[in-house]
Image (cartoon, rainbow, N blue to C red):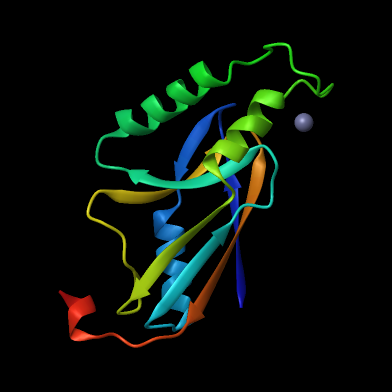
Length: 141
Ligand code: ZN
């Protein structure tokens, strides 16, 4: 089943921690072992996995992207949001997370972030959990 999240963003550039929503979708799917695919159906937003422990990491990522891709830097696209389109491509619009023991197998410091580059807006995010494979003793370590 395709699970759909609705995400309200509050700034033009923002990283929203959606880990709890993804974990809930994984739990609801009933899949114990498999993979979770997260897809952002937008051209000026993205998804990435990175550190949640220090919120400055997300701020640094947004600042670095804005230095790499400045707003209004002579782009052709008449809508005026080409920086957001380029950032979407840099971040990517999908992420895969392994599912183990009925939960997203993220690292201790990892979180899944919805990346807004042209907000504030109400956005969507699709989550599909696919079952498959078996847990081995090696995976459990
Ligand atoms: Zn545009």
